[in-house]
Image 1 (tube, rainbow, N blue to C red):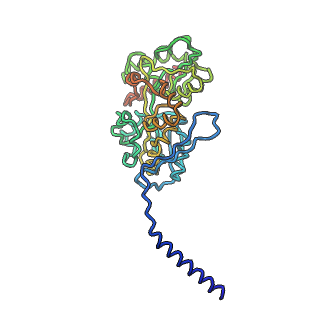
Image 2 (image 1 turned 90 degrees about the vertical axis):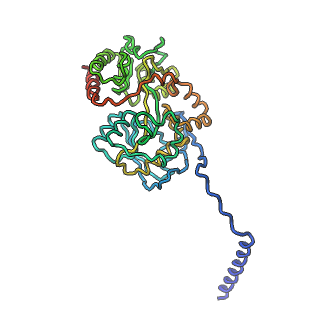
Length: 397
């Protein structure tokens, strides 16, 4: 009891002292709210394969106005195309688990969605496929107010012909399809797609396993529209492509650079990013936009109709568009980046990589090359004729 009274006395004295102290200090000021655009810490990333430290996942502001309740995001996209650091950073910031399934062609994606595949929250189709999906009602409309970082996209990559107003798609990467050449094996200058038919290149050519780019290239060699639907022109293109086949060692859309770096092939038709990666490993590998014109493409994220986690998809789109996240794309998969804020960050953060990006025709084609380039467009009813010819050529008929 005595000890209890003593304890009560001590507590009383402490309470009095605390009251006097608070009265003397006055009320604590309310801290100002953090600005909505507070600059995030730049991520550390590297392209060097021998690096022992993985790129730091970027931490970026949580921008979308809508609350993100989902804890799952299901991606369906091209293989070897989305940096793991970006996925890890998004998962860490939002507490969302990401599943990443892959496909190797737009046709594979299209067939799956047309067959009624459900469960995907984000897909990554190319331009002409976006147009088809919009026409067939297979995409969710976007609310750009929930993707404020869309402002980071350069104006020339907005409002494209396949999705006016970006009502259904957000740019991810873009690029060209050009002539890749190992100049240590091919010493004379090459300037045209037609050079691929030279008999000296028998068994030394790699082509993309892509009917739109390959058959389209042959049509341009013949002087026709890359997206021709004329039956007679398509038959001529088939005959011309069959003439090329003895020179073709393989068709590979996933990693055409592999055979090139191994010395199995000397030249071919490939994506610009594959050429850039190969050039980084072997500077003798060059990239050319031929006289007949490169191909040109635009890959875009979109949300398929009925996506179960649309809120997570919108959050990812906005996260991906931050310069800190988008710069990881260029460092790991150097196609061409439409995010002007990311390129500005790259210039400051990694001047050597930025210079390599700007100085190489694969990643930064000239204005003249872009103007002369040929996009892939929907063939409509002629799609079956294209598919038939492609199957016949690959079958050796």
